[in-house]
Amino acid sequence: MTFTPLFALGSSEVILLVVVILLLFGAKRIPELMKSMGKGVKSFKEGMKEVEDDIKSSDDSASENKTKE
Image 1 (cartoon, rainbow, N blue to C red):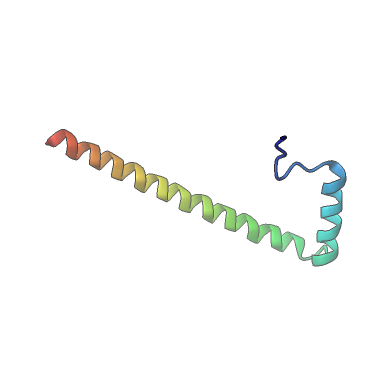
Image 2 (cartoon, rainbow, N blue to C red; image 1 turned 180 degrees about the vertical axis):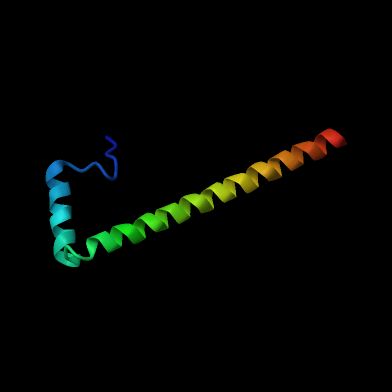
């Protein structure tokens, strides 16, 4: 049994995807789509960082409570 990564695409597949995207959205809308996708990724990363910080701070407070007892 072999494992193939989900996004293991060759150059021909990437070119085909670019052509399909150009046909679906047109050349003028692609920059708008990429900008909104970038904002979404940035927002997602900020949210993940906040969650990590919350978990870390709750772990720190929990360890402080254990040392006080």
